[in-house]
Length: 419
Image (cartoon, rainbow, N blue to C red; front, side):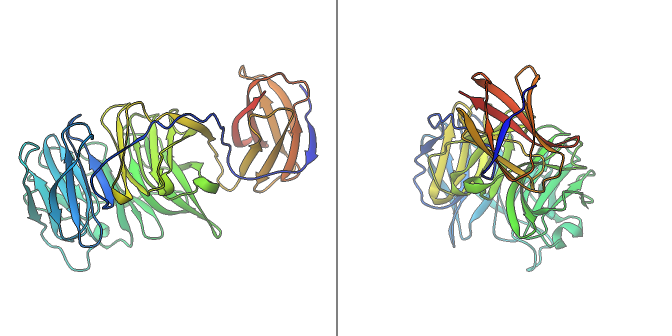
């Protein structure tokens, strides 16, 4: 084992590998400048987007995989979400008592449906989902007759001090609602919405913006953490059907941008989007994240994939993005298990020397470890300051793995390229 030559100096944040590739998200001409808030494709060719600003609400449709879009419905308030079960569509708006229904994708008329028991103080409708032909949910309300009538659910959902930001069901009985508006939360039902229970999430979570379960047990959420006076965007993960959640990734620096949506194509592959055109992707269950090039600075609102390769993103100013190859990665963002402890190594790739900056609480047993790809430890060095310069000594060119540990706890890990 070799001992690193260390000097005092340094930096802060999260590990980002350059490796830039050409953007594989392309901008589609939507024909509108309205803010687009949600998207759904009931078939590979036919898709709908909804949105609007101020006193305008719109629904637009494509019949050719997003190449062309036409307005098919308008309303007096922005339309916030859209969902299809088979070929029947549903949409909700900022109105507190109106849900729109499309009987079939082959019929162009959207009809209004009223909810029973709505009061002026109820929250605006923001999301909608169906579990079968007859049963659907919008946070606080449920239908069992295909949307003809909507009834109030568990009063805790209608009165809880959070705006519902997302809703999903993993089967016909178990579902989740994410909430924000300060003191973010996640609610869970296991009895078809009769009762909703607030579940445990990390105490640092300030708001939860989006939630998605690619399998009944594995789920992800996009959240905002508050650590002291610092706000940091993060990804949460559960592997036990939402009973417990861990912070698996935090965004820092220019990537620290409110994540408005997270969607997964399988248990390991997920995408998250947010302000400033940010798109990040994981292909290994959140262990590593790739920054993708969006080609826009719009606020990105919602993601929908029709296949593992073909996906769409909508956002402000009429933004619609499309990919046919999963978006194409453009730099690796390493997982950070401890959001108050961050590490940056630069430059990376390194030549002879690289700076390490550690932000967080250092203990006397904080150490840097370097391994080759077979797992053999090549270097180990104590870290006693937040700013450190490392020297490659005689280590050959190649890709290596590193960890920062405190005792038996791995605080951070990533890849280091030497060339």
